[in-house]
Length: 499
Image (cartoon, rainbow, N blue to C red; front, side, top):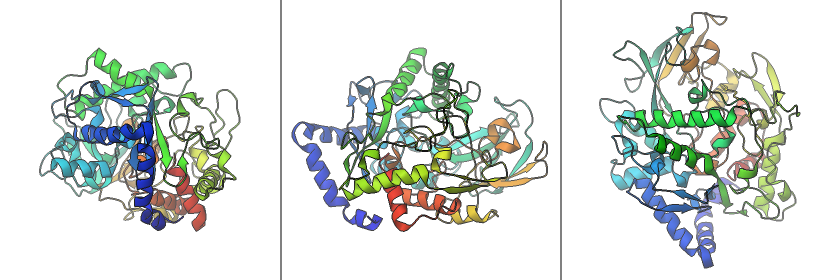
């Protein structure tokens, strides 16, 4: 099934799905879905409104949904309340209709219906720079929020960094500034991370900064540290993104974190494959996730499973039962699952993993958490999608970057002045974890994301450089010399959009 054919078939399939969902007891759910989408997306005032479990939200390949272990999502709680000064709430960037992430389509819809007045577009980080002319282009086109980070020494690392940093490309005039305390502030642009499926986290935030002090790498401390990290993240987000004068109250923080703990989101239905859970033994959808076993290091691909279990590359097993399906889309999805689990990759020049060597692996080398897809231990990596074609020299990274549609971002030059990497120079659009640790070995490195709910939250990668899953697969195919055929490429896309 080619993408063009899928696009041509979109409207009749959509009509059929809506008719199916509207039948009998589900008629009201579709109406409620549309109402909730409009209410939450526009930030309208709501009170005593609950999002029922498994309410379907339309996305390009079917419907996504959320399951809460409390039975429903309270849309009147503090997660959806403005606790700052600019009208924003947690729900501003974590939309139920986008599997509690944020899609560029959602951003564009809100910009259109509010004429750019939605709190999402607050200049503090919804614009390319916090002062000067308002420019929402990165948010509109790539779903990117500006993050202003202090170069070490900072709250995480009191020592001077091992590198100097300069902006060699500064398209908006605020790539690198100095605050009143004389500290360097770096503007990087990142996608909001989903605030769901958080019970499977191994690091919090792309650069791991919210779990830097209380890491999520030990089963004995996991739940306590996760609660601490989520609480601190809610405080930081309210004070920065919502520009609050005071942090949320203890009660508000408890309710926000409690809501997040309860959420699991995933794709519920595929236009061509039908229901993804319970159909001929399938275990897609969010219903299965609360029962999925997890502990830090489970199935670690690098041999560190604390229970001593060997790595099993068959990380995803939710569509194994579709192997002999007569439905061509179901059969394609199962083939894609097998490709994800077992197709060989040639992995090279991935700081944090290869250490100068070339290794053979699979997608599950980095995505080893069973049926979830992030790495079960903190493993920040630099796969090259934050590099710039103007400065890149690795031919495999160049080939991968050419499959993407990167926005115009600042490019930073980092020159290592201390440590074992002294004398080396790096060019990147996002220094990643290095802005937290001050270490040259962390330049460009960031965590791999949980893969569930992908179809609901395009574009992809931390910097929104892939507009769709086709570009994601094409990037990996070139970057790691996989050699996928056209059919294998489509099978892998079909699988990823059902997660």
